[in-house]
Image 1: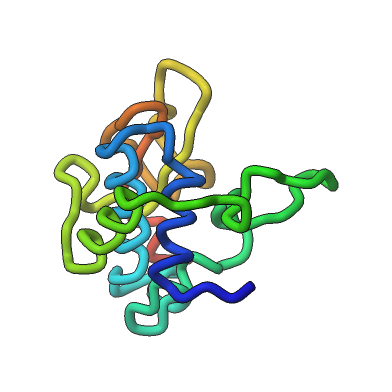
Image 2 (image 1 turned 180 degrees about the vertical axis):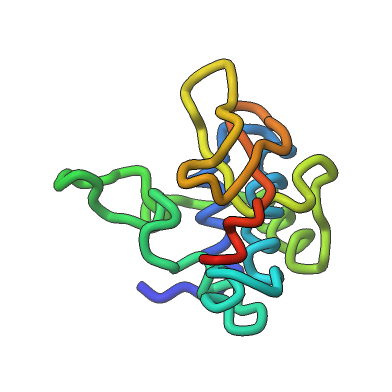
Length: 147
C-alpha cells in the first residue's frame, strides 16, 4: 500500500522511536528533517532539494522500512504500524521546522544497546552529539562531506 509522506513519516517515527517518549520521537524526526535539508553530501543528493520521502525510503537507512532483515520477516516495519495522534503531531512539528535542541544538527542515530555511545558513527562520518533515551545522535564530520 502506498502511503502519503505524512503517513509514512508517522509510521516510521512510531516504529523507530515509539518506545522512546516524545523527546525520543522528536529527536528521530529531527534527524530525518536534517537529512532532508542538509546542503551537502549523500543526503543532499538523496533528498533532491528537500524531499522527505526520498530520505525515508532511501535503501538501507531504516530497519523499519524493511519487511525482512537477515532473511527473516521483520514484523517491526512501517506496514505493521498504526500511528496515533502523537506521531502525526511530531511529524507536523518537524515538517513545519521544529527541531529538538541537543540533536538539532544531527544526521545519524542508532541504538548501541549499551549505556555508552561510541564517539564516532560507523565509518567516522558522524561524531557523538547527544543521547536521547536509548539512541545516540551524531553530527556530521568533515568525512561526511565526501559521501
